[in-house]
Image (cartoon, rainbow, N blue to C red; front, top):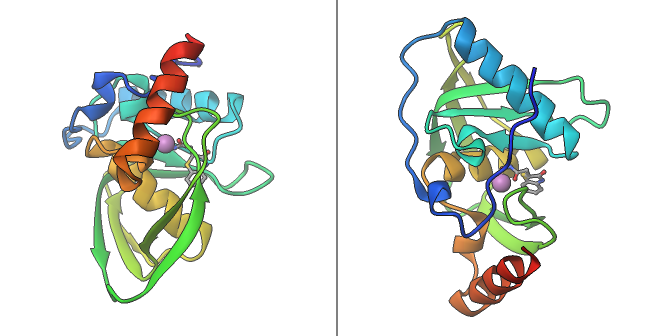
Length: 165
Ligand code: GNR
Ligand code: NI
């Protein structure tokens, strides 16, 4: 297993739209192992393949404090069940380190995806998982949580991150 380098905003590769996974093989399993190791090494609760420069529709999530509830999400689709239901949450991102902003997202959603075996799954996430699922879905479509805030705030965050380097 290998800890991979996480791309940081405003790296343009974070804007690439990921391609669907068609082959469910050992390489895919190895990729998700690396993603879990990379995510846990920086205490994240989610990581999209886009963030390590891999343009495939793969995300890993573990919101449990014990880090023992791994969830692999491949080729995800999200259906908003009730658009009138939304919830705010202070979001952060491993690709936008050190910044947190309150983001409003739909709270009544259904997630369809494939697991590591290619088997189709469907869940109705609750609470924090609802946020993380949409956050990772955004990454796979080249979007970041800072795209949900004002241009002014986004530019300030970008300038601060660029200066840190
Ligand atoms: O570790 C993470 N925490 C988090 C907190 C609130 C909403 C979303 C997240 S996901 C983030 C890890 C990450 O950047 N995933 O892409
Ligand atoms: Ni993120």
